[in-house]
Image (tube, rainbow, N blue to C red; front, side, top):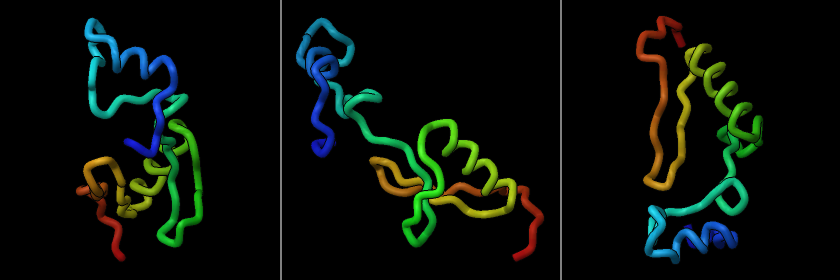
Length: 87
């Protein structure tokens, strides 16, 4: 998360011993944190923002596609385990 410098509000929460987010790793908000986007294997961005990305992923899963979700801990593969679509 070092690539995302904390905004003033997050820094205040992070440094305050009385705050529940005191020294919480990772800490960020919509202002200073990472952004959500969906891209193709080739890197072309197909949607951005929480609502659009969720809608895109749901549409892909409904089409029987497999989605790789990258997070701070690595990748998670998403699929519809009950999909009967043939490849």
